[in-house]
Length: 398
Image (cartoon, rainbow, N blue to C red; front, side, top):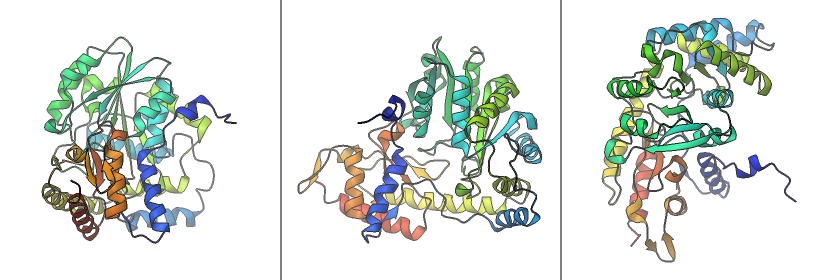
């Protein structure tokens, strides 16, 4: 008898994690699978960051519980980083360090939302946004930017979606899954809409800020009129190849930061002490390794773009950030290979996994059933092999 809560029964499993699990099943059967499903850098954490963690262990001063919002010197360093790099004025008291940017966003949702509050989500979106909103008893409201507009929604769409129940707007830039980057002009147009709605708060997810090829990274909180209504989310997983260290943070008006610290105190308490010392080194040291990784991602993007353009029936744009493509593959719907028929993105991903031994993620999970997400955070060799295999097996579909 199922005695689980309605909350957990209605909660969807993360599609990225689900596809990664399917890929592992194939590997366990001895099948070599190239994983392009998870958004995880294939680089190792830079050595100077590793060394900082080792030093913290050897010093023996960081074995006790840290303060719930994070060590003061670390939050001061984050505050300084935001001032210098992002033009965001904030103090250490406005910072809360969490167990990854995912927890940072969840803290905000649970701290701000009441049942029935609406959250505008720019679509395509990161898979966990709607689930977090629903767990906090909010109502997701999706507005979509199409492939023809680089998947970017407009200020007019935002204006049209706002109701008297709107409490939060959330988006990522650079975006997971599309790689779209909002320009300063586009964000200013959104700010001009929101300045007339002082009861709406913006969650600006900037976790991919260092993997940006557009030459322009603008934070919503850098606009003076938006400072008191914006929660900036960031972390160390992507730009510093620190996925397993689990360090994220918010910069927010102090009353929101205090609420998130209170929430976190009841769920997990502080982030890992040693991870914080490593992350402190990451943002106070030379960023050359980060820039080198970003350069490698850009080279891979350019290569994958050419390979995707060479596959008949696949439509894609050229993303300006992150490490994903989000191509439209709907031209293959209704086609068959023997008794195997592809009717949707799930069928497409399973067909590719079973026949090309490449794992992808269906676009439904990100808000677009005509697309799939492909991560190019893999070696050039694996990317070439994967795209070649995908092209070959798709040619069988008639």
